View (cartoon, helix red, strand yellow):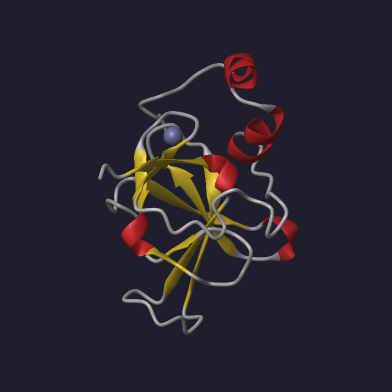
Length: 135
Ligand SMILES: [Zn+2]
């Protein structure tokens, strides 16, 4: 599939830090409980660190205690792309930025969290950039 934002690999590598590149472009996962947004409660909008697209709002962030920032719904349903991921001997649903195709994390459903969707978008902090709400 073609994304609105596409760049050669060398350009992504130059623009992103090594940690950002590993997660966003090589689908790595940051270690649990290390990301800068794991416990953040600041109001605002989380955007894609690769292309700047708005992805999640702080209102849908919840405490999952899983070690990564967790959201129960994307900002807009077409802000993210869901892709079946059969790596590591599991069947999971990968979450990518719909604008640039960068890896964000995975989404899990039916875990029993008390949220409106019963979904957990488990997203790497390093994939996101929080813009605090004004005021
Ligand atoms: Zn993006």
